[in-house]
Length: 556
Figure 1 (tube, rainbow, N blue to C red):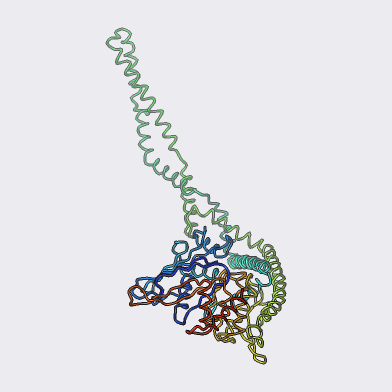
Figure 2: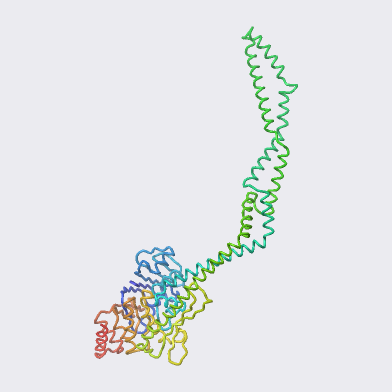
């Protein structure tokens, strides 16, 4: 429920702080004192339309803050959580209205879009008035109210889930049909391409391996000639090895005779021959390694050409050919096995639709029965509200072909204001005063079923008096036993039944050049005087005070 409303610099209101409580609260005051301004400011905090003209003259901006104490599972908290807003403690809605027309919205001191603020505001407060588009007259909400009255929310949620499952099954079926149709249209191409890639048998990374091998072969061709020439120099007919070996043997013999003269040269020459032998062995190994079959190079060239040609043809990288071959094979498999899978999906979709239709028909039957009960309950409230010749009608139009997540029904509230007239939509047929009383009767019946925790009624008693005003007061008091109710009223019969009475009035501000709206809580004596004023006008007589006493005593 609402626990506090604070307004700063909105039209005539310079500073107003209103602490509110459970039960029925009334707001009274002279015409023009600022009651409508207060409601306009309240609506602004709930996401209503902003206007730079709302800012108090001479101020750069105005601000309205509404604080709510809500249960942990209230829908408004879920909206806040979905928007990643802090949901602990009180829920604080704040709207800043700049004089240039711009506005800023905040929830728990986190800036949000107007859409989020409005969505939360619609869950926590309903404002009803004679000509107020903020009232709960949206036909789209009537189905939800009917379900709430009949405790059909669980069945409605099940219908919504079955509708989702059916639509999901239909989507899968449509996708499979589209895939099969495409596969059929491309069947010849697919089979040819799949056969071509199967024969090619591309492997991931194959292009890189082949290119590296080809590069090695090309490099080997360039160096192998020089390797062969050097090898021939060391091992061929003109090799210096025989002459060096003969020289080494001669030095060995002399080294035995004169080691200090020939020994060093003999050892060095021996090492040179060993080095030459090692060089020859290395050259022979290199020549062996460089040997390749020219046909292998040709095969590599042909393979690379085939892979790259396929890559260009299918517009994929060479390394993507293997995956493409897999997709072609899968598409062909889907074409070959698709008929069986398609039949299974068709059966699943048919079963899902059948389950939805059965549950939707059952829900529709319950809605028709609930509509009769709702009509009976609302019509029982009408005679005391001077609508004894009127009739409330819940229209449930069922069309099995119109299948939605909400079922197969369209629900709208109609009224017949006089016998013999044609019933029509409540918003179009009822006058302002009648509409307010119809809405009050409906809200009394639906108070604990689908209602916001705070209801505001803006002068719904206008144009009525006596017994009708007292009946309105009784119903507002009954309603306040289940939800928080704030009523702006000119009817003393309504004011007398309030648990808390606020008086709104205009006062001169300190500068003596302007006025501001003030609000005060009326206690016993002051409340008696205000109700007496409402009964008699500017001059309060003792008879008016006595009448006020009787009203207060009767409402106690």
